[in-house]
Length: 148
Image (cartoon, rainbow, N blue to C red; front, side):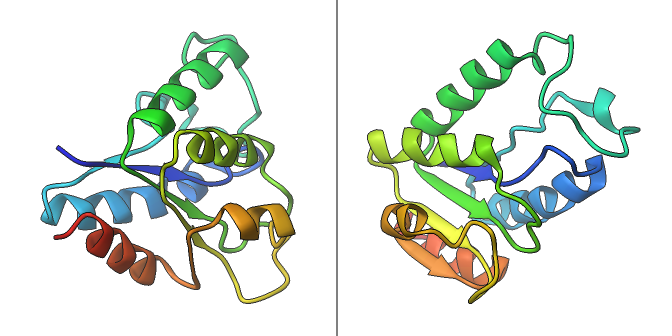
């Protein structure tokens, strides 16, 4: 089954803020028989956090656990779809994921505003294969790449 990794800011957001868009995208991908892979899966214990930290003392949320699983997910997916909409500060983890995806030659779909986003940087522009301004456009690109 084809997989799309759902990258985007987590640190500083509440659980709903970093999970709602991922659940929406996962439900749309499922309609096509595609699996959406979220870095938030198995982390329901963070659901009461008002501002998620960059690491915790839990095996999936410690620095080694995050890097190991996220690297595996990015490099084993077919596409990386990134949602930067509304970002207030640079997501360091997501930027690292760009490097992993590019090194593994995974197509990157970046969902970002036309201007004003802190991720609007030359390196991100260069690594982005497809730049769109909303999630539904990003989903259509993923569908076309996966030939669905």
